[in-house]
Length: 433
View (tube, rainbow, N blue to C red):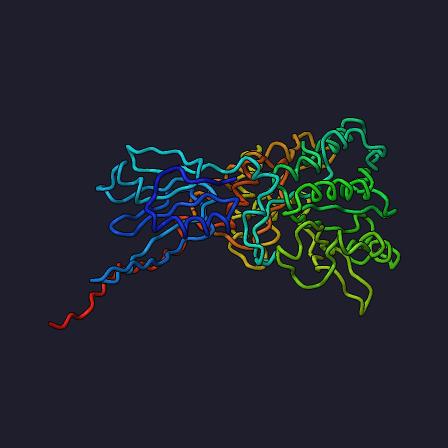
C-alpha cells in the first residue's frame, strides 16, 4: 500500500497531499508546486488521475493564488523537465508517497507496480466504471488444463489410431494454470462450456469431461471471498458438437437458472453493472438462448472463434509450414479485430492448426503459438501507450505479465490527455494615500 511521505514538503502541500492519500490508499501519488516545475510520464507509465488544485495565501499587502499539480499513479517513471530543480529544492517543492525510487541524475522518480496487482488489480480502478468499458484479460476453454485433459475420464470420440487420439489430446490443452491460478495471475474472463448432462465442463467438440461445474464455481467463489474488490465474468454455454449450442433444450435454461439463483454470489441482471455493483460477484454471461419472454443475464451468444480454420486467417493450410507462419497470419486478423468495435469483446489470442488424420504434416498446437502471440500483443500495447477501452482478450497459456499489461490498459498513459495549467495569481490591494 502506498502510504507515507518521503520528504519534508512545503507546508501548503501537506493538506491536499494528505487528502489524496486518504482517497487513493492503494496508489502512488506525485505532487508538486507548479512554479516552474513540471513532470512528464515516461513510456509505460500508467495512472488514473492527473489534475491540479489551487492554494491561497494571504498577507497585509497581497493575496496569492498558486497552483499545485499531481498524478495518482499505478506504476511507471516520471521525469522532471525543469533543469533548475535540485535535489535539495525538490524536498520542498515535490511530495511523493513512499516506495518511489529516485534517480536524481535523470531527475526521475520510479513507482513500482504493487506486489498484489495480479490478484487485486480491480481495486486500482474507479468503482463507478461500467464493466462494459473495461479491458479484460481472459482465457478460452478455461478448464482445458494440461493435467486435467490427460487425466480426463472420457476418451476422444474418434475412430482413429492411438497416435491421432494423442494428437487430439495435445491439441485440446489450452492452459498450464488451473482456474485458481489463472485468477490469482490476473485473469478476469472465463469460458466454461457446460456439457449436455449439465454436471461437468466439456472441453469443446471432443467428448472429454473436465471438472464438475459446481467445483469450478466453488473455486471462483473462494477467490472472490478473499479478494472482494474483484469480479469475475464467466461465459457459460452448452458445449455439445452435434446440437445447436445457442439453442439448448428448456431443461438446460432451467438448470442454469437454479445454478445461479444466489443473487449475493451471481450477477444475472440484463444491464451492465458498475464495478461497485459487481465486485465480489460472478457476472454470468449467457451463451445460450433463454426462454421467450424471460430474458436474463448479459447476453453473449456470439460464439468465440473455434479452433482455427486457416482460411479465416487469410491464407490456406498449404501456406502454413510452421508455428511462426501461423502466428503471423493470426496476428493480421487480430490487428484487424482490435480496430473493430463490433469484435472488441472477441479478441481470441490463440491459434492452432490440425490436419486430416491421414495427413502426415505436423499439427501446430496452442502451446506453440500462445507465447508468440502474447509477445506481439505486448509490443502492440507498448506502441499505443494510452488507454484501450472495452476490449476482452480470450487467450491460451496466458502469462501473468501479459495479464498485467492488458489490465493496465484501463489506466491513462503518456498518449492520453493532459491537464490545462493555470498560472499563479497575485492580487495586490489598492492603497490610498
